[in-house]
Length: 420
Image 1 (tube, rainbow, N blue to C red):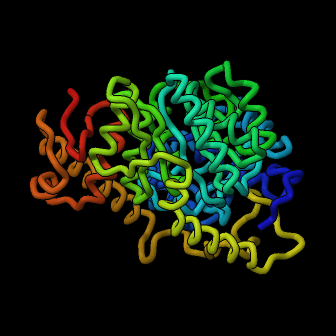
Image 2 (image 1 turned 30 degrees about the vertical axis):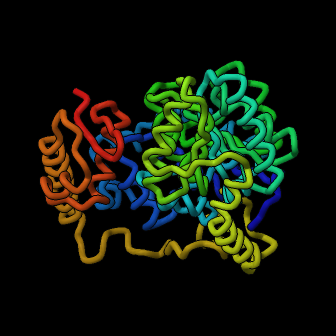
């Protein structure tokens, strides 16, 4: 893996791929069809292939129109951001896409990374909690972050006020690795009070976002940001959280990804301990000291370290581009994305592909309607939803998460009900 941070992501031989990937990011809408597109061919080839391939991969009419009509100012701002040192764009097609993220529901199409992208391959722990912690909660976050960073874990958090801020500062104080996952563009610190901390993390860690440079804070982006934070990490530790804290969403998403969920207990008189106690009642691991976290994650840490050693030992060439720069056919660590693959799905004509897309869209809409009818205003478990809808748990989970993020569905204790 090329780790030279002085190399830029916008050099001439990858400009076309970066531009095409930026257009794919800007067209918004469902990410799965855009991921399928990047599994067929490299971004520049995908963009040049035109509507037949786009529709064959499932892009809807609005996305097809957006690919042609992406705002010039938006693209230019992103290009200027990418042209700066230490700035990277890592797409779904890229061999340097973080492996753990590939296995979460709705993985991001691409990541903008400011700082050291190799941190995304190292074992990480997500530390999350209240934006207004008690002094004890603040101290606990700092203590755990320092100790875990010294042990070599990357401390991942969301740059929010409170627990997040304490965790980032503590990891930096011991020269440990820290990653900030943003719900804004990579160049937009939020809250503004953390502007200086944002700059320090760019210099000594990594700031990442799935949103284009210049994207401001939007309420709907922060719950979806939590899935990336949970997905990058081997486990999530909740330090302090109220009964309805956003940190509990991160913890639940971590559990759904098969990652370890841990919580720090507190006083029964502290309202910010109620979320942690709820997690522990629901099966999260109670931790009292940093070594508890290390012990719980030891096997997963060893496995990820083994994978990283194998990757670093893979044959490389002097001309291998840096992280986020390489067309896949030039990168020897690529997972074999074939740039010569047919531009249409096997055995399909453009007309048939368009028909398939229409059938797929109707089928997806029908499944969502079936799920919505199966949900009531009383909490319903996954097994009962499977029985009512005939869908698999994986299908249901992939539909329920966006509905929850939109505020249409509430999830509590593994049961779901309509919010309105």
